[in-house]
Amino acid sequence: MTDRTLDQQCTVTRPGIAAIASALLVEILVSVLQHPLRARAPAPATRHSSTPSPSSQILGLTPHTIRGYLSTFDNLLIKGPSYDCCSACSPRILEAYEKEGWDFVRRALDEKGFVEEVSGLKEVQRRAEEMEKEVEWEESEAEDDGEGELL
Image 1 (cartoon, rainbow, N blue to C red):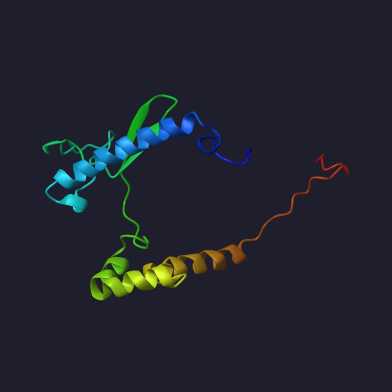
Image 2: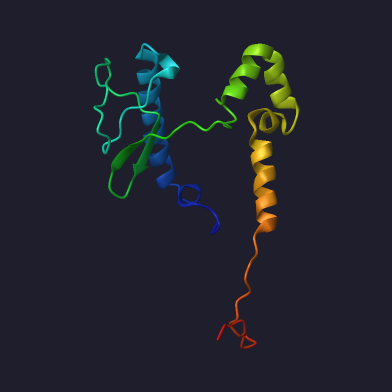
């Protein structure tokens, strides 16, 4: 149990967090469904942005991501750029789905690594592994006292 996060250990925390998360999910879903652009609704401007937030929709903002902090009971709307190798919404994935339809979904479920290959994540991983091999690690010059302590 010690290697698990608090929500995996605690029978008090987990039910509370689950209710908060599901409530926020419902709010986001309803916001997306009422927005004229539906799933293509733009992310609202962040607090530090100079552009005003679009709140002219019936339910106000349509956030893409909400990060909650239980220690302060704060929620933060996070806006980030889309990733061109996203395994869910990258242009290559969407194009493959539009072209192949259910056959694409079937292959994604049946073939391990298929989605990573189509999205470009496999190539990203390959390049990262190549770069890792090129990294030269320096050995520490600290002396070991024989008991696992560095002098």
